[in-house]
Length: 133
Image (tube, rainbow, N blue to C red):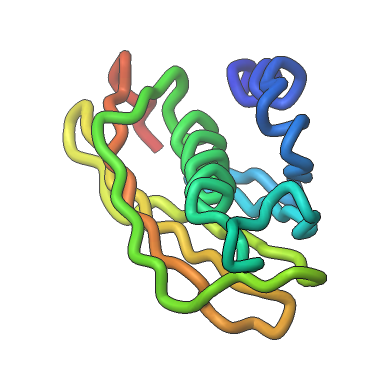
């Protein structure tokens, strides 16, 4: 978990946008971000890039907690409803599968009401083989 500890200390962008880490376990991470004015787009809803950043950070923590170090191979997001001002967005990432050096993660982003705002899928490359459980 050394790389996760380093991520928590060294990720200036996550800190800059206001992401707080709630929980990190093997293959799982939960983070939150209170929505502030600088997260809003021209329509006064949360910018898609802010939602993607939150989900991507949860993904990074989850995959590096399971088999560090890991890097992203691909990521996609489906925006299901707008994030609104005055709420807190929470992203929960969990490992779905690991085969060899590739792992798949699903991240669900919810708002303060528990409504799903976005669904994110990430594919990670494990830079070295994970230890057997």
